[in-house]
Image (cartoon, rainbow over all chains, first blue to last red; front, side):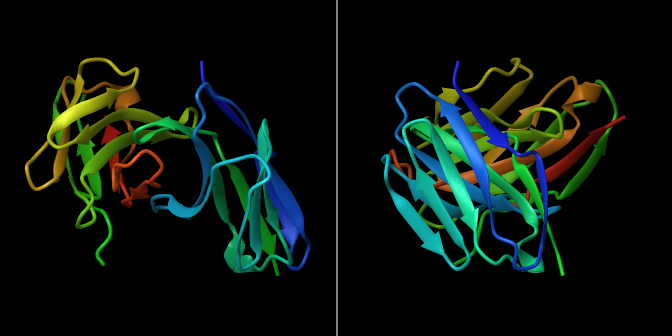
Length: 109
Length: 113
């Protein structure tokens, strides 16, 4: 059975304190991995797609990386507006994603 | 470009009733997927439609069904509601090629009492 595990479940950072979120996966026929951000009361917002081990993508203070077994979302010098739940999802077929349960990030000023 | 639109935003139903949720995808997107989100289970895949045909289905009972219309709009239906069906139901659309990311709506919050 396909599985995606995210850690930690929750993370509290001070503004400017860099950290990383982890997403480990066991998915047969993996085609790639998505990262999403979800704010309370809203649907997930697409951030990145990673297709192969060694790939990296960046957007503002966020950088996503992929290895053969896990992905990391690095947050550099976070700001309070980066507070959200970050979800990773592995995909192996048409529009069928296996999601992790997310990391709830809180950045304090 | 307008995003994925889901209606209604909130629903309160009683056990045993049925409910229909609606989703309008991003213009040009032909694939529509539905996910259930709960605090305990996270996001779980319900089904995916492409060109009015169900292409994939998750591990949910037959009470959960859906359909897609010729304009790519989609509906999902839940019959004989149970308390455990209380969740955020999210619709997502994509361009339908194998590697296209899904773009989600803001969901319908269903509460079953």
